[in-house]
Image (cartoon, rainbow, N blue to C red; front, side, top):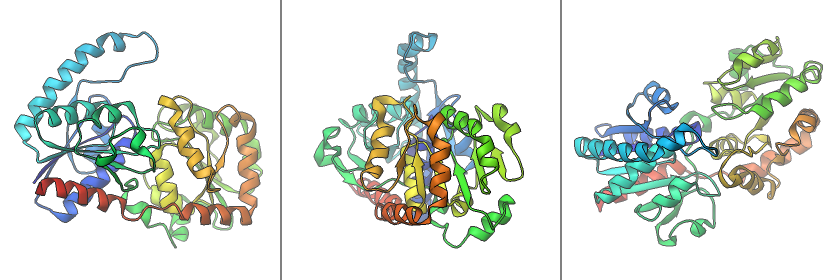
Amino acid sequence: MKYILSGGGTGGHIYPAIAIANELRRRDPSCEILFVGALGKMEMEKVPTNGYAIKGLWISGLQRRLTLENLLFPLKLVVSKLMAKKILNEFKPDVVIGTGGFASGSIVHEAASCSIKTLIQEQNSYAGLTNKLLGRKANVICVAYEDMDKFFPANKIVFTGNPVRDNINNTINRKLDAHQFFGTDAEKKTLLVIGGSLGAGTINKSMAAGFEKLKSAGINVLWQTGSHYYENYKNFGTEIIKVSAFIREMDLAYALADIVISRAGALSISEMICANKACILVPSPNVAEDHQSKNAKALVNKEAAVLVTDIEASEKLIDVALELIKDEEKIKSLENNISQMAPVNATEKIVDEILKLTRK
């Protein structure tokens, strides 16, 4: 069997696609898998490092202001559709799977137009524009939240949960290994700070503003700034505050963390649910339809997370974190509540649906 997977722009689209590819390969080592991404985006580097071939399309999203990119968008759309058609004709996939992002729009749309079976996976509680458009043509739509029939045809929806990186499900009893790996003090509690694969400006500024409080708090801090921000904050690193552009070993980071500060992207939330972590969510306001706030409120309404808004973060975030990390009873309550939201075998369920399409 041959499969094309497409998802990119952020880790929230890329890593679910890689998890699906890994499960397809596990079930059938002889299958052929090709990724399709957007030229110049992070998937062009992340996918090959995970052992898969990828082809890039000349495509990007619309900006919120008048830019050269916006003026070029109609041309890029036409070119990307032609490139997608060429890839389909040459590779001849049995199923095309999209996990979001602009490249997936072109390849999934062209596949559906050529009567190739298609499946899309929507990670968020508020569907992205690309997936909403693709939902009209896709054969199956896998979702992670309830009540998604307001975005998609109800007869196509399958509730699966979000796929996460394989090793995230294996963080129990690995705390000592994690302390040794990161060189942190096993006697101290640990705060993990992540802002998504690209980083989060507000979270980084809040960390810098609260630096003296963090230094004197008697805790370990793992601070992932994101590659865009690392040069601005690398000098904040100390023996107890570990600053890095990107944490590749997220399984060990979650194993180490007592609490997590994070944006509220779908992948980050899914990983914290699977890792059973008490978390403080700071939704990004710079996303379509404010979907990160909706993701966060889905947890907060079940008392499974603490919410600090982006506008409050500079004044409140570090104080809230330091108060929470001392409150063991609150941490246990958050861990218990978030554990109730854990999806069971999300990746396997999605691959089951893919294989059903191959049999059809």
